[in-house]
Length: 64
Image (cartoon, rainbow, N blue to C red):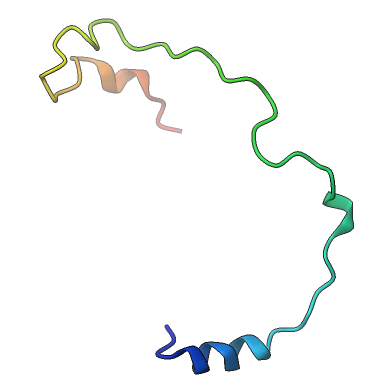
């Protein structure tokens, strides 16, 4: 962490300049495909006031 703007400026002054990578100009940034429809587990919205997820909801998430 830096303790002052002067210290930050001093550290940044030591960083070498690098040219902007022109190969990325015009390339889309972020998602390029349309969003997929949302699919909630069965019973997810049955009791909207209950903060607990429905039984078995954790089985829908992969551990990878």
